[in-house]
Length: 359
Image (tube, rainbow, N blue to C red; front, side, top):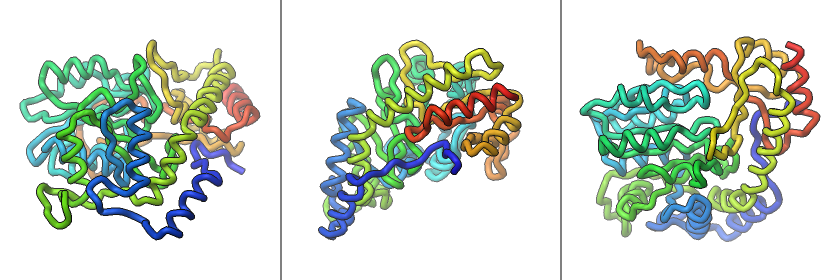
């Protein structure tokens, strides 16, 4: 049986919560503050992230989209994002009528390069959206300094980084708004889902309206909104998963440590968290010139090694741009993500190391 790079880990507790909701029949809520499970989940998120407010929505993409609406990003505006990430970041920008401007990455942790960011800012720039890719924390100090000087808000795409911190501070809590994904392959899940965090009450109030067709009391639409609500079933799963998150992250960290020890001395570039950075090990990503050979051999040995992102966003047919992003294009050709999720065993890790060393 193939060991997947990521897999949802759901137990009896989640099943019991879902069954209780099905029996009660309160599957969702159109109330301004959401249903009981949504509110309980949001409190747990605030407790972890140390933000004042959390607003649950039905996907990470919806979280990014809602954040853009909340900051009044619209047609003619530019939003600076990396191309080396999942397409949701760019799609959310286009969905509000704005234009994504692609920024190159740094080779050491595959996140937005502050120097290239600085060069790409124009009079039309209305937001910066760094991505904490693979759970690695973006160079947020430098990005914040640039953004503050130019008075540009930051939306953190923290979809892959629940549990990652820098200087003891959880990602998503550095800019104006942070966005997390609860997709099935993330470090914790609600099946589909997302959550925004902010410490700005005005933004929180606006986001509550945006996720619910702009309404406050019944059919009184006040601003443009959509149905971005998280159903009670999903919120209940997320609530239980939040309580298991610490254990999940401990196991990932343990597996990452073992894999690093096993692969030390090889020619592959290993992921190395920088000083003050604590990553969640959502994806353990190496770089090597023989990426495709290693990937094929690992897959033959039932190890779900996976390439994220072999085609950067600016090279996809819809976004096909002539932008030169050398580090992004290097990463697309050389990176490979290896499984360190909680179900991975020491024997699996030894197999990974053995295959890589043999090549």
